Image (cartoon, rainbow, N blue to C red; front, side, top):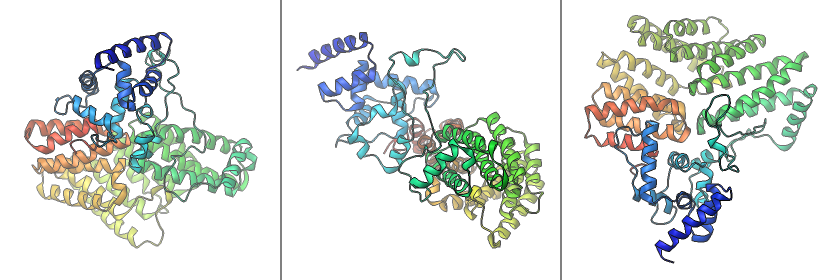
Length: 499
């Protein structure tokens, strides 16, 4: 069948299927069956677009979203063709961010863009990320065109979560066995059944959620964690006797984690609400270090909101109780130093940084290990915190800027697999800024590119405005640097751009 007659047939078939109330996903399935098309090509043809037309729409969408305001990383028909042909020999693997971009333009979800052959060729990390994304209900062809009566915006997909929703495929020895899961389900249906084993099971689920966040980022965990907290809060409402205190302790940890997730995704008011609730529960459980961690997070939240005075005061308050683990006090000294440094209070910043270094040394020799909710307080993490402070001090002091680069590089290099986490990407942004202060555009661009790739893979949208500003600064001052172009491409297409 010739190209012209096939195109005419597709136009006629598309019109009949739309008139029958069928979705573009329905049309793509039929096109894939009739014409042997791969999923991404089938969806493009379902819309009736050529490669060039689809590329133009993708570029227009990227410009509206602010990911390619300079036009340095435009989609082309040939690149789109490579994504459609993968995993064939002429194809190139699209990243999860690239697939998300296509899904936005085609009005579908990422799962409709992949078939079995695609999934069997994904990396393990990409498979996990993609599996964590909820599927959209596309049974109504006009579903997303109908605005919410409350907001006037298109409705988001509705997803149901339960207490046991986990990212499948995560390597963990914390997954509950069938007996433990059944015990927990019975306890949720009848809170009087809560006992020590149920509390231990809840702690195991929370520990797995923390580990999962390092892999897939904060935004994808918001809904399940908050839903789970609702169940935990219901258990607390009916708990009494000797089991109440350990249950409230776990609930405080869960609410503290929810507070962090909301900070990491820029939802300040919700973060404050969850941290306030966590503080009450930690106080009830007389968990001194946990309570201090929550107060410290409130200081971290104040810092991100530009409230530097409260950030200093809350960091000090978190260290007030002598029962607080020394490693937590070490972090709070660094957080205080960071707020002083950003405010231009150099003497106070250096004093707090010196106190923090002494507490880090004390923590290294302390017999008690880090509590489970701050498992990441390691020598590498403290080096990153010191580098963050030094980066601010280095704005007008090259010696401090050199120390920032040294500390941030050493800390990142020591993270292992955690270097790919969302929170590590924030430190990569600070490393890029330090390189920029040192006048090293290529190194700044490389650090920014790595951060942008992680942001794309983990959905860390909060970092994107900062990375776009970095890209704009590089384009203005060093437009011919290859690292500048690579950063722009990665911001648009994900971590394999230019590969």
